Each structure stands twice: as structure tokens, then as C-alpha cells.
Length: 66
Image (cartoon, rainbow, N blue to C red; front, side, top):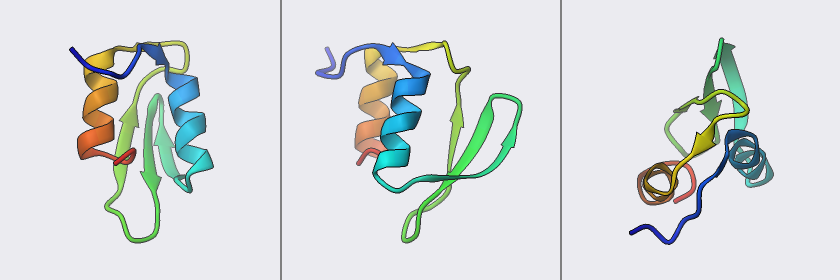
């Protein structure tokens, strides 16, 4: 079980903005985020969508929240 709680996509996106990620481009709900020194990351969630603990844990260990 993941130590990360379920949360809304808007909260996750806000957290990414606070740590320096910026939206490079957007097409519908797919946002390509960029940060200097990191590979681009596609954030593909609707704003009101709930992101479960498994995906939150994955984003932390393999993605931009690492």
C-alpha cells in the first residue's frame, strides 16, 4: 500500500508548480510540464479527477515529485 493519499489533480498540479514545474504546452487535459535539469513530464489528468495512491506514489518515485 502506498503512503501517498488520494488527491485531486488540481492539488498535485499546484504542488508541481510550487516546486518549479511549468506548463510547456497543453492539449485538452494533457499538459506537458518542464523544469530545468529534468525531462519533460506529461500530466494527463482532468482537474477534478482523483489521483489514487498508486499513481501518486509512482509520480513521487519515477516522475517530477522525485
